[in-house]
Length: 93
Image (cartoon, rainbow, N blue to C red; front, side):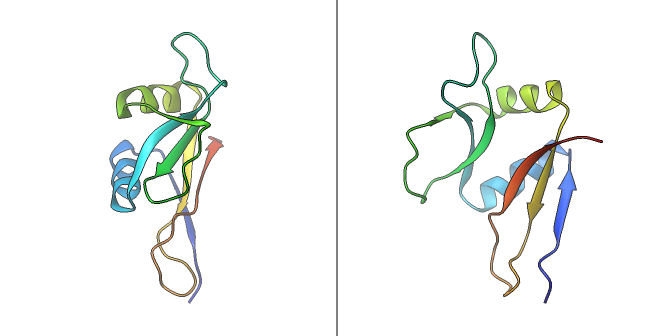
């Protein structure tokens, strides 16, 4: 079975995908400034704690997502059929 990746800009799809896997919106500390949350990431609750990730709200997350014209590249299942956490933010176009 192939592990196909998908790309979306749909906020509901992104939020559902993340929350289904225990993920929450986050930004990388020290990459933003002022009202800019910086680099976006999905932080998974049961992963080893990354001190560089700071939680942010979904509204701030999607505001930055749109301002930077990002797309969400993700995978639903791994090649063996397990739930995948693979994701990456890429520029649209």
